[in-house]
Length: 440
Picture 1 (cartoon, one colour):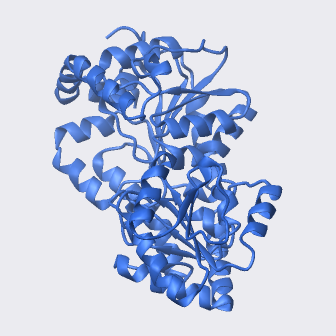
Picture 2: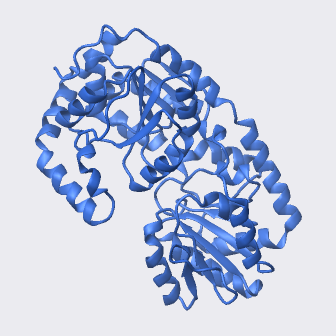
Picture 3: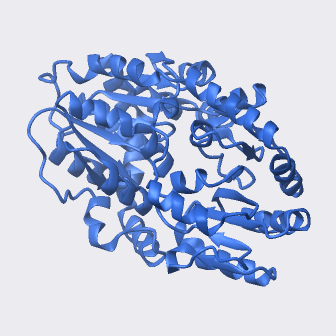
């Protein structure tokens, strides 16, 4: 397999990609500067995005694990804990600032965070020269051709974990022809979320594909401080309420319209609105005000006072808190074209779930929930308010739906053990035959 990976990395399509990416450094610098101005990059850690490490490499075996953002980071935290528990160090890289903050709060001893380098050959080479990982893991659908090629060329095993590949993405990669075959030929092992995902990876040319299940089922339910739960619950006592979580631009307006619909039937209604990106809290408050609603932001120290219509939970790491307060939740990213977010967390906490139709990122899990009548799907944003109303008005129905969702979540557990077992053969393989990382 090592020879096949090296041949894929040496193929013309990946050589051409590397040549073009290598010339793009001035563009990447401009892109980074633009993202800094938009608050999407940490200027104090600029070097990491260009392959310059800000920490020393620890002694012993090192696993490099790359996750794009918050959802993927949360899904692999149990795996990181198991790897560090077995004596390996874990370097977690992400792209977003929010995921970096989550990592700072939740990574176990033996694990640490850096921002991922841009996918240009000189930057990836600099990164790998410093870190010298024994195993590289990418989560879900993180496909970086230059990085994949460099790992294959230097003999570092590469595994896709919790891999997902939608039908649309699979078709796009197929259309890329020799380029796609070369990219996926650099992968040592793919551990797919489902058999459907596994079949697509095999079709794209990954030599070794297995389906141990979805790691999201093995992630712990989001935690919350019991005192904070009690305090907020007391402040909202007696009011009908619901939660709209992980919303994206365009969905906030849908939530505010749903609030107006619901408030006609449920006097004193409070809508808890938790944007996917907390930095948008001020924009959402302005939207609510423009809609004639009184809103306040948690990040500004506000409380859900009696005359408030919308309480904006624009804080980090409090999903567990608000899920414990809500009798029903709409999970965003499902009307906006972002592919949906993890429905396992509401299921674990017995919160009935309403979702839109755009959930390609976790379609297999949503399909299980829909088939079990353990979640409500609404295809038209105008139907969100009526769907939430039916749940709020039917406490026995809510509890029955939540119990079915909890059963689906429990049935999916076990992927973590199977994933770790598959990875051990790569992590403890002989690394003595690897080529020099800094060389070609």
